[in-house]
Image 1 (cartoon, rainbow, N blue to C red):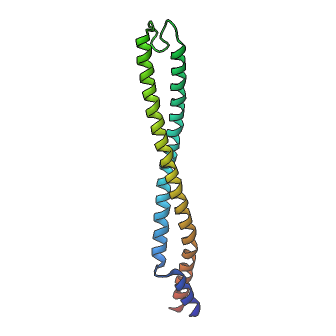
Image 2: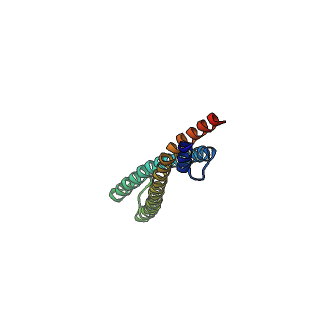
Amino acid sequence: MENLRQLKEKLGDKSPEDIKKLLEELETKKTTIEEERNEITQRIGELKNKIGDLKTAIEELKKAKGKCPVCGRELTDEHREELLSKYHLDLNNSKNTLAKLIDRKSELERELRRIDMEIKRLTPLLTVAEQIRSIEEELN
């Protein structure tokens, strides 16, 4: 009987069902966050490639003489400036998006660490809850 009381104190006001439900919710949330983090990681890779391509295109356009490396027609100063302006705008937008994605990924990783800590804290309580259930069944 004393053992049962001590086990129940460890659980606090949570029932075995509460703990099991909470663990399931945490696992579901963890899966959702991991999926979002993986999508963001992929988008980060794509953006880094795009940024590299834009930087290369800008450098090639600055060096180009005679023919436009993009469309093949005669490269006038006006056309060069128009393309450079477009590429720089796209480059800046891509860098801003990349920074936001990196920040979001960091937030998700912090949340995953918090969830993992909570799962580690609750998992032993599930064992305690199962011990309580077993003892109560024996008493009945």
